[in-house]
Length: 308
Image 1 (cartoon, rainbow, N blue to C red):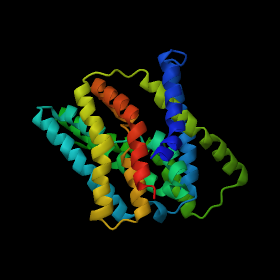
Image 2: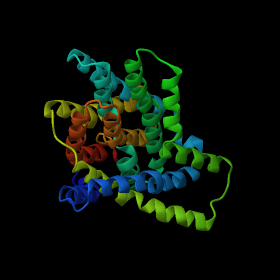
Image 3: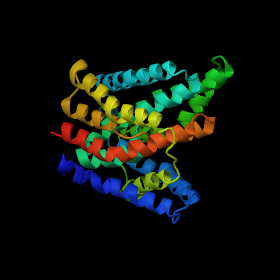
Image 4: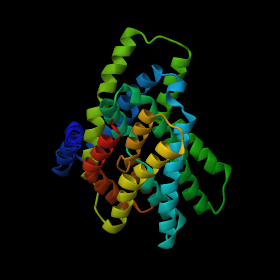
């Protein structure tokens, strides 16, 4: 574990550097927002497109692997929901808390870190986890919150979900890359170099942006945030591990990658959704802060466990 911890340390050091820049106001909230936009719409999209264009659909899609991740994630989602109902939460707040319990920072942290630590073969598996998070669970939270406010399901809700998916640059870049690959089109050398240079900015830019954004987070309702962080860092990877290693016939290497993806801390886009809908942004903020801090140890432990 010490060896893996030392390998993950530079990634978290970049997050720490971003946090230091944010907390000292050297990097303002506005600067963080623009850096996040650059990474989200340009650098990370270039990286994902380049990865996808060199993969086939079969390299990403594995029905048993998808079933294992979906089953393991759903168990913890339902557990967090049941605990929320026991505490008397309304549907909207419960949906936000359940999202914190299972949605990790796969795009900004998982893609660059796990591919470097676990090898290029991890790309397809990480992208599968990212796709399920975005398509299934990010859609589910919009349906639950909007549906509970309207009092019913409507075509408007489904339209909102569909447009959200179509406008997400991570989904668009993966789909375009796969279409490029399916057409068996070679990537011209200048285009490949362009994508490589731009995509290379995704790792340091994303990690720095994570840290800078953490500087604006407030640690309130710590007991709730602690429970949600425990769900995300411990229960979620444990549930996915049970599904991938013992319930479904998953390749051991891909099982290890998907378990590592499940161990990532709470994603920043959960906070964006909470803020957009005005539902419990403070507890989401605290969950991101606490889970990211503790993930320095827990992610290293999980990767050390699944690595061999």
